[in-house]
Amino acid sequence: MIRDTSAQDRMVEVKPNPRRRLILLGGGVVVLALLAWLAPGIGRLFSASASVSSSRLAFATVERGPFVRDIAAEGKVVAAVSPTLYATYGGAVTLQVHAGDTVKKQQVLAVIDSPELRNKLAQEQSKADAMQVDYLQAQVDARTKRSDLQKALDNAQIDEKSAETTLDRTQKAFAAGAATGVEVDQSKDLLEKARITLAHAKSDMGMNNDSLKFNIQAKKLAHDNQLLVVQDLQRQVDDLNVKSPVDGQVGQLFIAERATVAKDAQLLSVIDLSALQVEMQVPESFARDLGIGMSGEISGNGNTWKGLVSAISPEVVNGEVSARLRFAGETPKQLRQNQRLSVRVLLDKRDNVLTVQRGSFVDESGGSYAYVVRDGIATKTPIRVGASSIDKVEILDGLKEGDRIVISGTDSFKNAARVAISN
Image 1 (tube, rainbow, N blue to C red):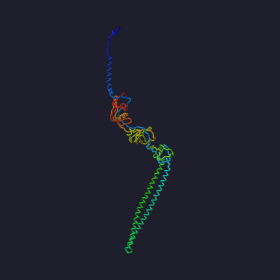
Image 2: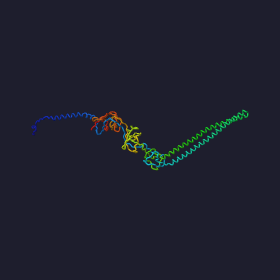
Image 3: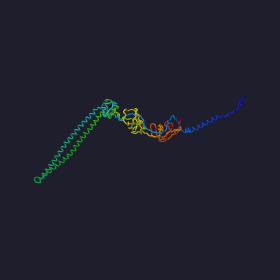
Image 4: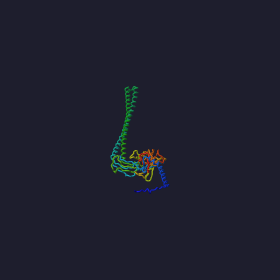
């Protein structure tokens, strides 16, 4: 039989250790304090619908200060006046200049050879000369006719006066018994006949005079009309010498030397270097705020010039609107067509405005809410935004100075009311 070791066991008395007790007690106090301190945060964490790492977000603080709305873009120099010249008539073209040549207003740049047009002018000029002869002949004929009519009128007046005298003598002779009653009657008939002849002469004088005037007027109008035809053809012949409408520089040549072109064909362009402007493309969202006469800045080549918005296109192309700025003062001499410059247009400038850095949250929420971050929790808060600039957005309601909001990355919040922000 195997014996156990119970005979060898003995009771050992454990003495109390005050130091260990103090350590355990102190650790418990620390744990309780830590739990009490973390309890609110843990409660907020559990109240959030989701948790998103802060590395995926962008934050900004609401500030109060000056607010400047402007548009900055790259522009190119264009000529405010850059006419393209066309052939007014078909024919062979002789160029008098080369691309890049400096030209003066009314200087001949090209000559169009058109024998057909010149021959037509000569024919119409000949017709005009013939019509002038007809007009002058009508005036001579009218004077001759008037002279004949006046002669007939004068003769009728003399015959009337003679008939009156004869009747008076015959009546006196009849009273003296020297003439018969038949002779008196005959004298009266002669007087009546003379008076009728005079009346017709006067009538013929008036009617023929009007007819002669109308005839002369008709020939004059026909001649004047033909002169207008000649003048128009003469203008077309003169336009065969293609002249520069402005002082400037020859731009592009669209034809080769001695090329035969049709009417209205492009010949060349002229650039007026004294009236340069800067053309820029503006995003459609900012274009509605642009207005004619707004001030801006044009910079390049180490220089900055004042500018004014001079034109805004009514058409939107690829989400952009074309606008032009003219120089407020004298056009710089060193600029060239199509040269690239930086453009800045001031839309609005105010002081003491509540703003926050612009971010995708404006587009994602439509400017109706933002996520305000406090104690690691992003809370969805209704807001109202105002005007926007390139880097800032105006806050009208819902936020106050010093608030910290999420400006980018809120698409991962899934429209939750509260989101925990983890480190």
